[in-house]
Length: 618
Image (cartoon, rainbow, N blue to C red; front, side, top):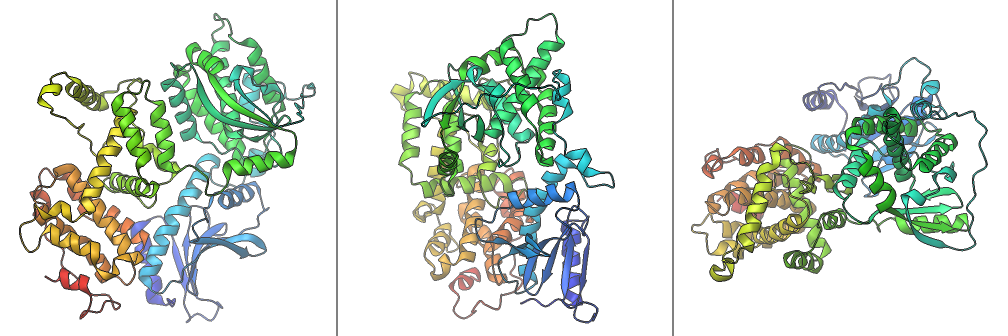
């Protein structure tokens, strides 16, 4: 276990100050009798008395220090963190702290030395600060004002005032919409009874932000030529929304701005005026108690207004006539929750690559033979293989830009959503559209029936992709390249000397310790680096490149006592090699940089027996 000393406090202060210049580090070692425990404390983006990071007794924790109900900011902030901090992978766990059942978030691994603490801090701060920043972006920093009055109100005035909605008006009772049995049906939006919908108190806060809203608008614009467009499932118990709140609230804001445009232009007749009355009545009935919900409503309303030039009568007609929900009405609240749980059961969510498959299939207006072959190829692939492929492609894309590529989740699928051929053509991606159509013309030319030539689209992992058919081409192409990168047979014919690619890859595929977790992480980094190089330069000078990458990457395994996911992520973001590959104009721009020289050997590496070290020293 790492002991807190003046030296360790100074070392962590230097590391934190260099990585996060605005953070403050304080600590107490065992020489100070005022404190019962020794600790190192690191600030967050809010005051230390509200929350901070703290290391003590071998554990790194994130502490919520203030009273949960002290003010509206604390209540909203603490609740947001508890609702959004992901503890499913076992790395983190909430514990009791100062009477709060979830008052401290603990990194569930013992910190043995300074390197462990640096890795753990990097992982926790990168993750938690992201959540804190998201919250502050929508709510703002706490102040001495009466935050509760400023944030917790019955409804954002922006919505009610502009549509001339009177909140104090006596409202007719809503239709309870009760049913005797489960009743599923597909309904167009124009037929949805918005005026009767209610959001029950047990619902979580409204959490969609501007990113989700912009994606929804972009999708609607991209697919507005379709005869039918399914927006998802809406689960109702009576008139209460059990599942579908995020989309219903967002759509109500979207309709608000659409009608706002028509009302502002008094020369136009207001289309679907009956539906406008439903939206008005919906906002009369709808109240939000959570400051998070109120802040997101305001943020998204502003976001939609900024897109008002995209919101025309054509889009309104598409929404009303062509967009649909699968509406499931259930007679008992217990059945509603059971249905909701079955739809959202842990482990049953679609993988990110499955979400991308659905998105890009919608971008294909008519399937051709190549599309059918690509989709069959996808379906025949093992899901585990696809997960590994997408993770590697995602990491190369992120690391080439010096961004974190720890994990690929459904929140990251935007990396693989690119150019829609039916959308506006911006100058910066015209080259990709030109390539797309040129390759299509070449491949489909009847001359190919004679010369049997084939041209692959010039994919690049650090570039934007073309949506639809070309995306499936890309996955088939990189699936093949990814498998070649890892197989020693790929290099057997082209390798030429003792420090050959074939020798290195064969060793990495067979050495005894290759299945240790740290060795797996190191291999993932090595494979991504090699994949990025081959993506740019093919197999030119591959012997020299593989040996250089091996020396560079596996020094991490030899020099460090433990290698964690955050270790390789930090190296890829801050190290030299991904930047060098990105900026290189030829293989020799990489070959000519000095080969890494081993600085030390970790105490858990047996110099006389370690096969990896023996190869490294050759």
